[in-house]
Length: 126
Image 1 (cartoon, rainbow, N blue to C red):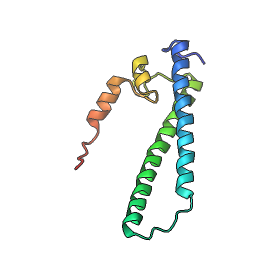
Image 2 (image 1 turned 30 degrees about the horizontal axis):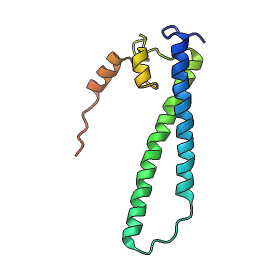
Image 3 (image 1 turned 120 degrees about the horizontal axis):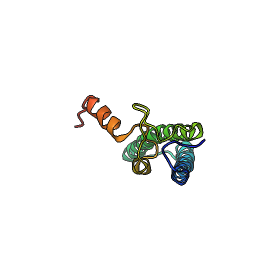
Image 4 (image 1 turned 135 degrees about the vertical axis):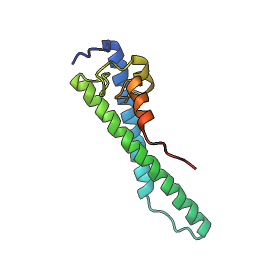
């Protein structure tokens, strides 16, 4: 479908980026699952066991972040199919090409995103 705000070559570039990210993440996910499910040798040393568990926990956290990004990429590709990509879900205005180049999964224009971030409850990280 023709996009109202993006030129055909811009849309093609962005779709290519999303497709590339999708393939890369899928490949990384397959490798991570393979590594996590591989039979581990028994760690005789408690310190080795602790390091292994810490690495496993870190890998699982990364996999969860990647899973969420995969969902966003698929959603963006669906929006391209529907001709809705590049349109802010909040106000209906165009999301600029430069913003989409920086964050191809963006669903809000910069003004709506800024407003949403200001309304978010502040989280303290210690």
